[in-house]
Length: 273
Ligand code: FES
Figure 1 (spheres, rainbow, N blue to C red):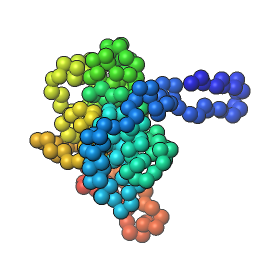
Figure 2 (figure 1 turned 45 degrees about the horizontal axis):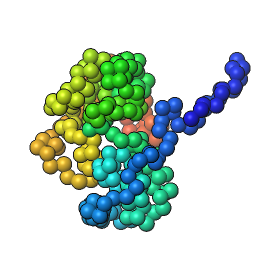
Figure 3 (figure 1 turned 120 degrees about the horizontal axis):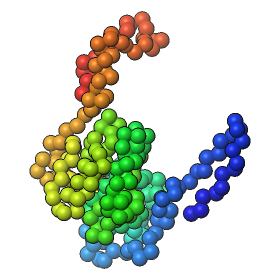
Figure 4 (figure 1 turned 90 degrees about the vertical axis):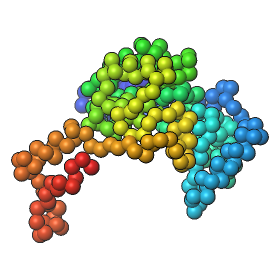
């Protein structure tokens, strides 16, 4: 895609923003060579899985999000076969399915490696090292964001804020958190992934492959030992604000309608939540 030229700067005049896909965003949903249909045995299995998913919803079209994860678990990304399958199961058009699929960045439009490594390059992570981490991994892996290593193990990408700013800079692997990363730790992380070592996220569930993760996101049980034991809450960088507020007797101003019932206090039940 060519980016339209920006108008010349005019001092304090209007600011023009170029809207549309990012410069490295894959704009084609249908990739050349992508699977166009499923073999009968695969179709039968997917149809049974889809029926179990659809049965959870009062209206079948509400099942589109998990169904997209289901076909992503099958193919590693969205293919014409997957799009058509979702449409057929839910009585939707292919265009309706594609409209949803292209809205959410969790749905991939390119084949995905076993481990989808997303480096947060949003503001806080970027200034604390996210940009440096991404540059390091680009050079170390020899791929650009969105691309997969030749051995098929790692797909590198950059992500927007993962709502984990108090652990910045953050990397997500198959949507599991790796907190407080550095360029060195990021290199060690992808090296471990590529060599098949067991890698433990900082918090949350144990790591599994991208396709296995997609199946869990489709709503199927995660029966792995310890899968539901992982915890995680606010980080120290977040809690320190609450602690300082308490030490200084600070409190949020009353809402006008609540002023008569007394000042709001920083309650102990909020810490660690
Ligand atoms: S900016 Fe990276 S998690 Fe929020």
